[in-house]
Image (cartoon, rainbow, N blue to C red; front, side, top):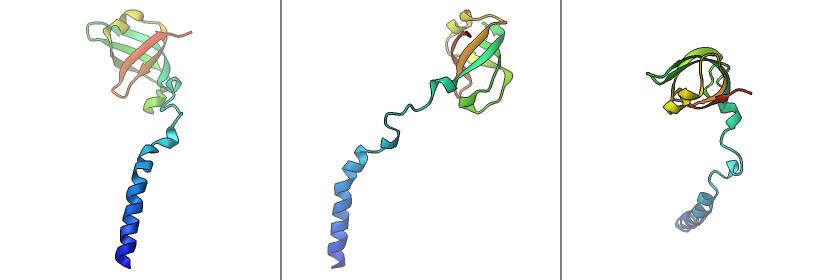
Length: 108
């Protein structure tokens, strides 16, 4: 009798596995993984260092990285971003977890 119950239990688990696989991650369906607004931070350009491909930015809280406001040096993903700004500019920018500026624009 135990062997029959074990066989039935195993068969029902195998039958349910494909349905469970189709619904994995279903709770997050239709919801954005992260808010783009929380990844963007206000700042002020303090220095543009084109030879090293870096920006010194006095910035507000970096919510996506859990960092408070401070002034720090960031590398840039694309050297063309350095041509978009100069010292004194107020900007909105995005930094990834490698501390690299991936996007920057003039603040409005």
